[in-house]
Image (cartoon, rainbow, N blue to C red; front, side, top):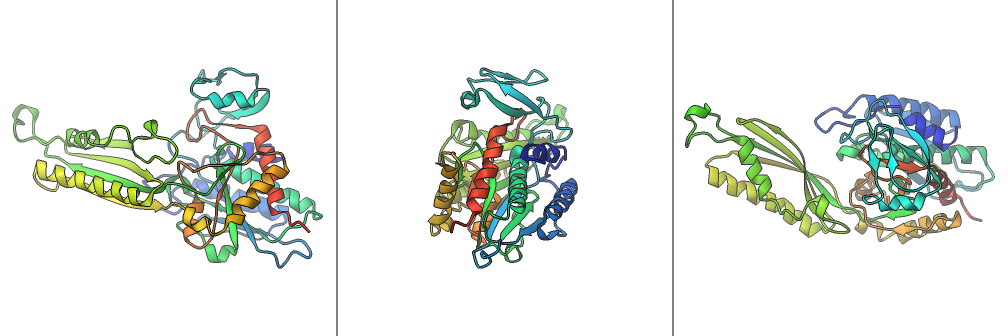
Length: 403
């Protein structure tokens, strides 16, 4: 199979993660893909292939003769897809893009005004959805590119390389991808996640990230006799939302700007729950954002009288910049590999995070590379065929030991 065939096979597996689950992995269906990948890696000739009790898949491509003493390089991608959009029964479509808006099978439009980058792919083949689901390029494209690079290296022993460690993680999309990653057992000296966007992206700066859950307990009274007695939890939680800075949302920020992102809300008059994300590249500002949310709850509890607002904040990952900067060769090597195969590198900050952020803090320096995809986490997700082929070339060049 080539990289496209692999990708189309992988996206047939529904592997959405579930933030509300307490199991590891959060959804058992991720194990189904993991088992398939473990068999595939074994068939390609990788050694010590396993899927552990937590659903992590590991495998190793031995060094070529004479390269056994070179550092071990890790290549990592995640198996889960975002729970933000439907991930079952994905029907990928390969289209010849001739310019203009893209109309998906169900009538959904990817328009040039909203997505001007489309013009760069005129006269290319694009893999898109039918408009009913996400595509799954985040991060099954990364998996397909890593496996295809390993397949190429296994078939071409004349391409010298050191030992390569391969790792596929569950639950990255809900911030848990590195929770049970066996860094010591993985045995890599350094690694790259292949989990980025458009072709050429190299990222080693990311958000500091946390998730927050706010539970508001109200007092429900029959509406006919509620005056001065009812405390409607829905209205109370709406008051909290209204106090968030209106310009500090994902829709109003870019570059290094942080935000608060309310992404889910449920409840009734008696109890309401809100889930949100906290993001900032600057660590001090990140900590200030958490203090601000706590102060809002303190104020509202005082206003409403009692402990009605209960806030839980959980840190997810931190900006890996300080862990990567002592290893500038990782970025320079990635740039050189891209240029060697005709790809112009583009070093940018991530407005998100990867497993590499957590792993870098656990002693495995791990910047992030592009997959080639765009519009992740939604039905307008896409990836150019050429970009996937190029990323396989990049990975092969990256691991190639020059004499």
